[in-house]
Amino acid sequence: MTAPDADYRDVAENLPPAAVSQYLAASGDWILETRHAGVREVWNLPAPSASPAHDQVRRRHRARIMLPLATHFIDFRQHFRDALSALALINGWSPVQLEREILSLHSDTFLVRLVQEHGGGSLPLRQAETTIDAIYKMLRAAALTTATPRQIFRGGRLPATVSTFLEDDVRLGHTQRGSFVFTVVTQLDNPADPQSTDEDPPADQQAQHFPRRVMENVALGITNARNLADGRTPTALSNPPKWGLSAGLVESLMEITEPEGLSSVDLSFDWAAAGSRPTVGARPVSFHHAHLERLQRVHEQLLQREEPVRHETLIGTVVSLSRDDEVPSGDGAAAVIISAEVSGRRRNVHLTLTGRQHDLAIQAYRLKLPIVVTGDLTFARRAWQLEGTVELDESMLLRRIADTRGTDT
Image 1 (cartoon, rainbow, N blue to C red):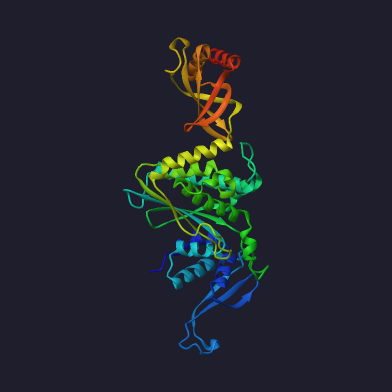
Image 2: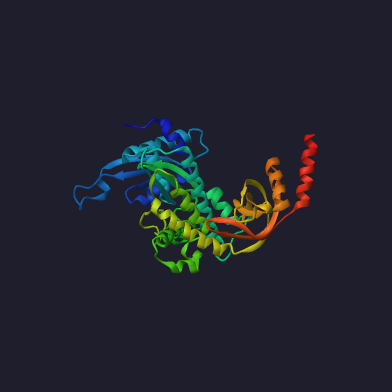
């Protein structure tokens, strides 16, 4: 059954005609019959020969298509959709599969397959949101490892190559069958206009592009995170970037694996056909709930390496106060949790305040005012903590309390 013309509208918007031309040229089956540069190409698909010795010139055409190239023609979109529809019909593909096959020539695909215990091909919206956020964090972490392997990113402006990759080079593709599959596509290069060149860029040159190197680091990091969770390759912790590892990448794996009702997470890669095939990402890697605790230990080791204890001032809002049983009650001590920015990301930080500082923290909590605290920032026991002698900027907080109450009156 032929798909409606409307089904090819999105495909035609997403695919430049150059990508279709390059796909046909690389397929090994289609033959370029005629070409009017910048206007159109005619491709034919010879029928299989009954005899190997049969004259190629006399072979019947199994199919022919006219591929329009003149995007400025008023009827270009209609003719382009007709060509795409014919190509899908010849191969027995749906519009989605047609787009995926053509894009795969110059795109790497990262597949995140969630296998639910119940629910089949659907999952809760919150889990979908968490998964997409985690995938973004994973790609961001791998991009930073690729761009600055000898530095730890501590917030601020992202390197230009990382920003370009996240904003322009990576996209969420159509989901695939098989439980619930998130498809992430990275474009290795932009197919050239057919009228400007007759050759594709060399495969080894494409492999050097930043998106490909990021995806290789994603595959490498995922594989080594699984190995570490299984107690293998402990030497990877001596030089994490070399092994594609970072606290951010492992944390994203934890976030994807954590939801209740999840049986497993399968991570795999389809590498661009036009590029050289990497040595990593050849096999799917699976994570289960049983790996979560071990991933948490790996994450803490990486984070302690990336974030050594340092004296730091944080600005945050109080999100929780509770009595600290380890401190004598006469001191009015409270275990406080503030939400503050740590290395460019919003984190919950635990600290203890006593006496007058405790009383001021209670007022800040009630009035929803930020507080400024200084101490030794560390990550231990799976939580950020401000330790040592914690100092609260009382004068600033008192001014804000007075201003707030003055405004209220």
